[in-house]
Length: 464
Image (cartoon, rainbow, N blue to C red):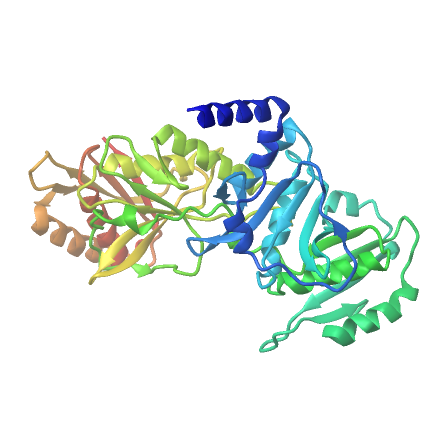
């Protein structure tokens, strides 16, 4: 009892002095040990003795995330959390990055720190030296607005890239290849006499995204040891798509979801990043971005994602990722259509939605392109109306009347649409599915499948 009381008094005293808050920004020992820091012979600075924000780039669910303040976060979550911390106090950031991690995630982290809502400009990269843990100050990321005011003649360029099949990066200075490894850095030290030491000179580092972090930080440390100032990072190509706020649905959340069957599915994009959303079997409940949320909360996340990709800087702009919807075939269609509607809102404008389906037991997708503007008045629509009551077969109708009900109705629908398409092979036809609010989602997918089998892929959705 006395020990518990003393512990509580100690914690309250730490909280009163702000020490507890500072300790919360340190990385857990387990996370630190999971990161193999680059080992450098160059002289580097000691780690800051005062309070700092420690960030580690770690791999979670096959994606590289930033671990900060007790959780692994995606790009948007990292930036928002850093913004909250910066509003409280602008502390130095110490980044722990594994030496084998590709350079691109570090550029992503630096972009988050330099974002106009964050502005944490003092970022240091943790390394190992003979003297133990050391840090070297990270160059600032490229800012096109500031760069436009520079004299192009005052910019010197150094680069690291790897040829196909090579494991070691090649060092380039002003288009002159200096070699690899120790040979390259010895040549760089010899070339130091050619550097422009004036305060206006900028030394631009172009690092290929696949270059290991260990080699990138070695270049930074060598330049720092040569007293080269005003360094900035610039990627050789736009940031990779995985740097966007990717939403992954864990396997535990996929169980219990029986996807609807389809015949016209396309290959599931296993390599491409997606914003995955699962429709849960509960009223107005979705799983996205790591937690359950209501439709209103989901819309807020989609708006935040939309704003993330509208940064002015091309280097900070994120890919416009499509949404992937996983929903049970018996789920109410309204819950899926609500996602389509949220993605098509003018302040969101996500370009497309993929519906996850099953084709011969294999998970595939049906892409749905969301229109950026209303259809012209002379658009040729081919309308299908779906009606039904709970527990009864769906009634399928077209302009000419009722086509049929249940399985027979969908077979006749596919044959009718194929016949119309064959009659007008060159006409620009847009399919329109008008379905009842609480119709099974799987039946709407069957209507979509009928359109796609006839080669009609432009679709619109209504509900009644």
